[in-house]
Length: 106
Image (cartoon, rainbow, N blue to C red; front, side):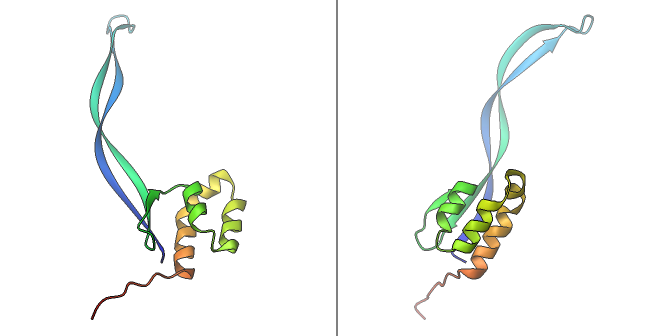
C-alpha cells in the first residue's frame, strides 16, 4: 500500500537516578545520577508517494489517510485505549484499499 510501517531499535544514553541504601537501617545514604545505555524502539511510517517518514502516531496516521474518509471517520470514533490496539490494523486496511505501484525500466 501507500504507507509502510517499520520499526527499529537504538541504544541511547539516558540519565537514571540511583540510590544506595544502608543495609542495616534500610534508609538511603547516597544518591547519584548515572548514565546507562537503554534500548529504545522507534515506530515509523514511510509514505511511498512522497518519501516522507513520520512517527507512527494517531495524528500522523490521520493526516496521511485523508483520502479515505470512511477509514478516517472509523479511526476518529475509536476510544483512546482501542486506538492503541487497532492502529496497526487500520494501517493494513488503508494499504489494502490504496495500493502503491512501483515501476521498473524492464
